[in-house]
Image (cartoon, rainbow, N blue to C red; front, side):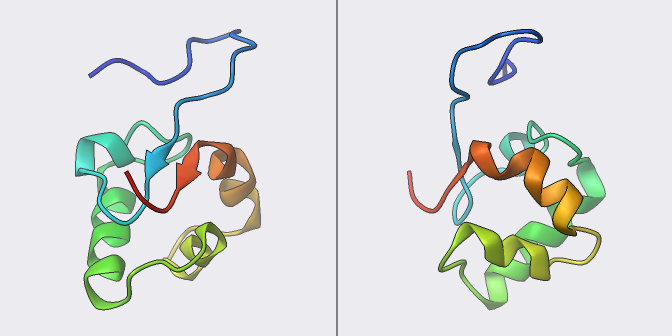
Length: 77
């Protein structure tokens, strides 16, 4: 899968559907590797996201990481 935003691009990023993105899609988010993608998926299996800022409830995602990824997130496909 290609990156959603080429380095140095001024175009708006393609967003990732937080409630049903695959692990590989989640790993395209800035600062998200395999372990964090697994945590996001585990969290949403228990609590679907009602707003994108709820991703901060996932262990290891704080304000700084959220701020880097928030423009890439949406709730649904």
